[in-house]
Each structure stands twice: as C-alpha cells, then as structure tokens.
Image 1 (cartoon, rainbow, N blue to C red):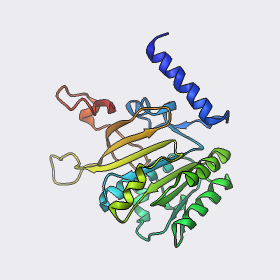
Image 2: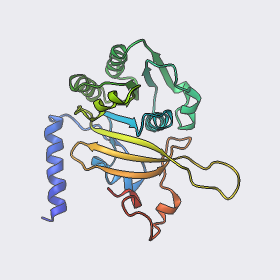
Image 3: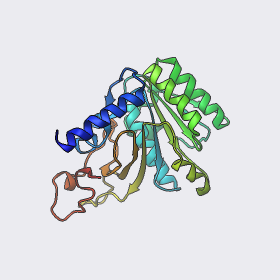
Image 4: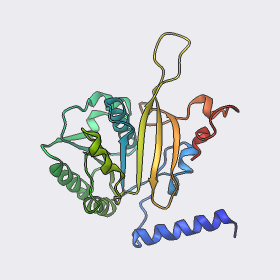
Length: 250
C-alpha cells in the first residue's frame, strides 16, 4: 500500500475512534479544491464545533474572523443563532458575507457564561443550521459539552474567540474539543487600475485539524454568498510567487 494511502487509512481509523462510532453528518466544503484538500473529509464537519479567531488584537482582524464565520454560516440552510456579550456587531456587514439579518437570531447577554448557555440550548434545539458564539475563554470541559450537543443535533457550532487584552489571547492556544481551529488575518487588497478598493484579502490559517495537518491560504474574502476565492494570480499559479501559499499549500 502506498505511503499516502496508509496515512489516509490511519486518519480514517483515528477519526472513527474519536467519533465513538457516531454517524458522520457530512461536511460543508469551501468549494476551493486547494482548501478542501487540506481539511479532513474535504470540508468542515457538520454537527461539530469549530473555532476561529482574528490574527491580531485589532478590530480589523477581529472583523475578518467574524465575517469568515458569517460566510460559513451563510452557506448552511436555515436560521442561525448568534450569541454575544458586546454591542459592536454590525449586522448589515454580515449580509456582505452572505448572511442576511433575516436569517439571524441575535442573543445579546451580559456575560460569557450566558453565551455558553445560549449556545448549548441552541445546539440542543436541533432546528437551527448553525450556532455562533463570541467567547474569550473556552475551557476543555465546556468545549466538550458544545461538541457533544453539536454531534447530537447535527447543528454547526462556531466559536469566535475574542479578547480585550493580549494576555487573554493565550487561552486560544489551549487544547479544546473543537474539530478545527482557524486564524484569519486581514491583508492588503490587490491594487486596482482605477481609484477604488478591490475585494478584501485574508490570510486564513488552519492551525489545528483533528486527524489533519496545519495549512495556510491566501484567499479573497467572502462574497455575498459566503464563498471564498483564490486570488486570480494565485489560481493561475505564477512561477515566482511564494510557494508556501500557492494553491493553499501547507
């Protein structure tokens, strides 16, 4: 058996053990072959918890992480529950990432403990397509509860990690039960031949994937259908571009 086939078989075996024999819920592909090839299963696992954070402490990177999550939620079908403690979410911007406000139930609560409670209730409900929560801390025990709730209902769970101080960012490096962990950093957009601003670009890092490898991708931000895209010059594969990011190679 070729080495790659052996590795794939071993990963499938690990995934079956970690799932405890639970029925697979399928995946939500990104629709970009270079990205889906790097994500175990060919896309984000449905009925699972995923984490995303901004690549820095600034509002720009935090907004990029939120729009990345919004784009994922937009590509599901059904109502989305968005739980938060801060009043800085600009709902119309979610529509730019394909998530129309009519599809979103906003739950603004006073503390993170209530955010977690809302997320658990939303995941147990089973009638939502995705549950999004803005969190500073995500202890292992809590993440296991969210993962179990997501598995039981088949609902997509997205934890957007946010923090007010850099000291709080260290919690993002702690182990959790999430299936994937992403970091999104805003990059300068490509210059245009005429005055204006082109489509936003992000450095999207897959920094943890259960039974998978890390990878990073330079991508164009979500469009109004929640879809990411490879920049044209990378999709066409110029010979002198940084090979680490061509075609989203890890």
